[in-house]
Amino acid sequence: MKKSLLVLAALAACGAASAQSTVTLFGVVDAAVRNVSNKSVSTNPFGLGYSVKTSRTELANSGLSSSRLGFRGVEDLGGGLSASFWLEAPITNDDGATGVANFTRRSTVSLAGSFGEIRLGRDKTTTVLNEEQFDPFGDTGIGGSLIIDANETSVSGTGYGSNSTYKRAGNMVQYYLPRNLGGFYGNVAYALHENTRTSGDFITAGTPNTGRHIGGRFGYAAGPLDVAASYAQNDTSFTTGTGAAAVARPGKIKTFNLGATYDFGVAKLYGEYSRSKDQRDPLNLFTVVPDVDLTGYLIGVTVPIGPGQIRASYSRVKYDFNRAPVFFGVNPADPKADKFAIGYVHNLSKRTALYATIARVSNKNGAGLTVGAGPSYTTAFNGASLQPKTSTGYEFGIRHAF
Image (cartoon, rainbow, N blue to C red; front, side, top):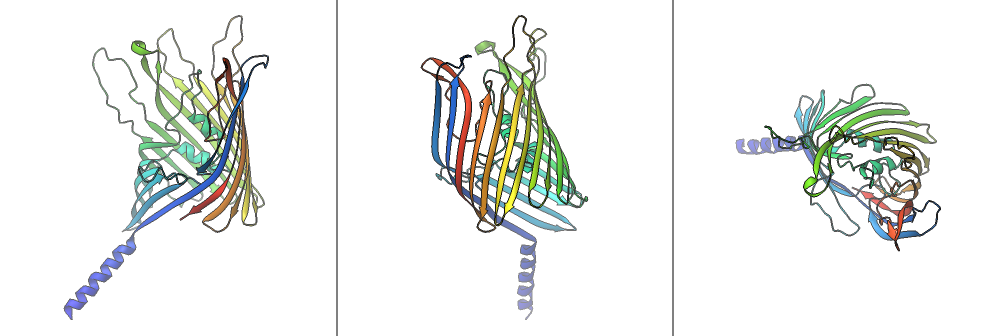
């Protein structure tokens, strides 16, 4: 009898422990037929010369939601305290080539309580959280944010470099505010660069902080209104010269954005302003590398229609290279681009949806942005120099979440 009671007590204890700790397998499988065509035109100032179009039709993934596979778990530690982990991997379900080879989407461990949450590991930056929240397309598919594309794309021949940690950063320590602050929310983040520092005489300044990320976000959501602002600094590096004369110099990309949504019921309006400054340390007293500014705007709307939703957005980005005045001449115009996207999502259930999207990007003065994945622009043809002009795409597909 005593042995039976001991067994029952042990089983009860195991049941209580399992109830306090859970592990979940989750994911998204999203596939779409996608066509993208990019047109390049002659740089001849009189409009003479060639125009060349490259196009491709493919079965793609991540048109409505990013395809992924993940594991997450939480343990109740008692007293309002909990520990959790989150491992999330990108997958390419269109061809099956990429499976759970890494967890570059997110790999974190957290401790949460009434004080908020401390989160360690690779995660989205504060900047991109704002970008996605105030974009009707959530920066996914060919309708996604032109502002994010511009911040991640280098501009050939201009000195504006790509921002590799704009969307996600590794080695990050974050703090999230608790959820019971009457609508206020936010987080701060610091990603360690993990570079080796060397000190001593005659050490040439290199890129000691390359890879470091510092960011913060603060917002307020109540009723139909949601508004938030974020700021981030990503430490980068750039190289001047070639061969033995190549010199690595540090730089910083500083980004501020402000976004808001207002839900009228019959429609939800979106708006965002973003400004990034790419700052490069001077090479010497006589050679200064000008800063490059990137300004972006976005307005959008979603309209619910029965089990579905119409989504639309218009966005613009403009580069400012802060060039020095040219005597007896005129500097070339700075690049800029516009994007219009519209789509429809039809929900078959809470987890499954059909969707279709069309989008178009117009480039001017050397900008080379596209609607998303697709062929590259043609830059030369039959001896003529070409520059990007337009990028047009459409996609229709199915998304299933589990």
